[in-house]
Image 1 (cartoon, rainbow, N blue to C red):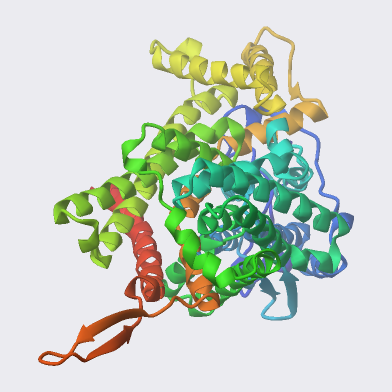
Image 2 (cartoon, rainbow, N blue to C red):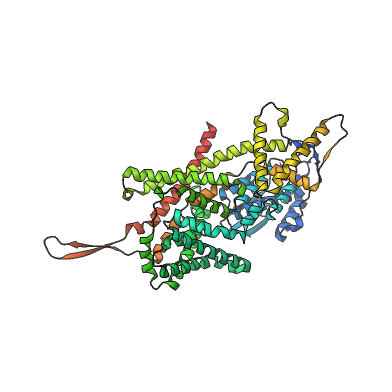
Length: 608
């Protein structure tokens, strides 16, 4: 592909005296095979844009050139899709600012919890979007990589926009990922997460796990049905999930000998819907100074959790004659398993983590990375908590300072582990993609065997995942494509060979762009977020609301008046149940601080 030199003297290429940077691929500054390949001029079809975005694009293109208009579209679409995938707002701002600074865009944005605002040309145009969010680690990673490849000049803005559209069409997602991305394949995750959470987090028995699995499958089926209806029916998902869980749990409790731990069943099933991550992120945003977004997110997740708890309580009312009495009596059937004494605690947690990764739409071939971060966070948090209990010789002496310390260390361990794994994977993939893209010397031209070893290791993993149909088909195709490119470049560099250019077919051009984008560094937050999800206090918010729905009885004590036969009765609040909000704040703030401490430690180590 050849590009014309930009004339920065053209008024259309300048804003307030500042030259605009082209959003086109610069073949001269590129390294590797890209500068040797003659490619067709790929154009993004702007007619696929929404009417309002198309109108702004045409106005900008007329005033400042086509590239500038497309860069505005790219920035706005990147913000929307990262927000939809629940990327951390502070990090999304950083990505958008990098694109803006690189290309000189005169554009601002306001990323709210649900509503996004984009302004361009000093408010000459303002576009609003209402974007609901859901977990999507794969999209978080891909959209960040696309932005990185564009700002580094490896791809053009047209190629970046085309790739974004293909991502939305699942053209860059493995079959395994497509299966778990949406219904009906997604249904297998609901009972798995409900059953494992009921036991590993909420003190349930194996019987409770079975009931929670049935509740999870039922809520998943109903959610699928409401999604098929679409429109306003989706608003009912939370209340329907809560009521269904309450009805099924209540029936098993009433006709199953009243021996179930209802709190484990309810919390395990509704864990899927508890956006506890948003609670921690809200506090993190408040700490970082983003008060409006942080407070709004804090309130939103609290109300959402209350709706779920209210639904579950209404389901109990429909099936149990005295739901309040049942709620207090069921507590005697909880915590029947001492997880500290069983060998399967960690395997069960890993099974729960696999379901959580599926919920987060984490690429299946990368599950090992997510599991490593999740296990490090959980085990450090668990062992720190056990250490404080042993130190005080009694769990009754455990205080909130101990809880705070274990959460800070656990969250920091998750960050450090994610950063270390990211650095390791990037180091290995850099060698691998350097060979695919011919950046530097070929492995056959160097005496070192390390390049050969790393390339063979990654290539073997790619072939294995392709044979198991877990990885993307294009990853295996890149290996054959690399051999073809190597042969073509050798012929091009040979003065005795008649080849004068390397021309790729459309399929090969797509494969080259895919390789260039995948060669970018992985998104640490996409790897870290599932671990944070399992550390967060979504269940603590639920316990707070259940205490509001079923107020705990007062502790009574009969005291004898000294020197008489008279007695009097004292009433006081049950401190264990009344301190739920205090525990919630301690856990949430300590986890938010743990994330900050973890990133601070990583930055400090890089500076030393």
